[in-house]
Image (cartoon, rainbow, N blue to C red):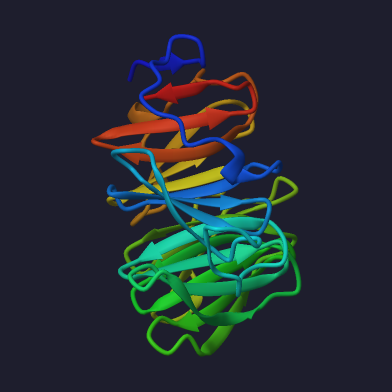
Length: 260
C-alpha cells in the first residue's frame, strides 16, 4: 500500500469548529454520527456541532453560560466518547463514566466510577466497556447500565477495539495487546506485540506501533497479514487510528496524518 502523508500545510480547510465556545483548554476527544460532531473538551463540557454547517448547537455538562443545557457532567477533562444509538457515553479525568440522551440533549445518569482516569470506551454486543489507566475494564449492561463485571490487564489500558465478540486492549509500558472473548469473558488469542493505538475494520485489527508502523492482523486467527503491513508511515509512535470510506488514517507524534 502506498502512504499519502498529509501535513497541516497541504490540507484544504473546509470548516473550523473553534472559538470562544471551547474555552481556553481545548478538545480532548471526538465522536461523530455523520450529521453531528461531538467534542469532548478539557473544560468538562461536551459540545455538539452540525457537521454540515459547523455551527455549535448545544453543550452537555458545560460551564455556566447561554449554551449550558445540562450541568450534570464531568468534573474534569472529557477523555473519551462513544456513540450508541440515541445515547452518548463519556469517560473523564474525574474517573467516571456518564450517559447522555442526544435526542433530549440532556444527561441520563452517571454509569459508574473507576479508580483512575477513564481512557477508552467500547461496546461489545450488549455490554458497554470502559477502560482506565490502572488496567481495569468496567463492564456495564448496555440497557440497564448496571455493573456486570470487571476485567483486568495491568499495568494500564489506553485503547480498546472490538471484532465480533472479542475485545482487544492496548496496554502501557510496552506490554503486548490482550483480548477477551466477551461471551465467556476468558482471555482470547491476541497479537503478541505492544501497540500505542488500535482500530478494528471488519475482521482486521490494526495496531499502531511505537516504531511508526501499523501492523495488520486477522483478528479471528490472531495472525499477521504481512502483505498488508503499513510501514514507514511515521517518525515515532502511531498514537491514533481511524477509518473512512475504505481508507485507514493514522496520526503520530511526528504531527503527520497518513492515509493508507
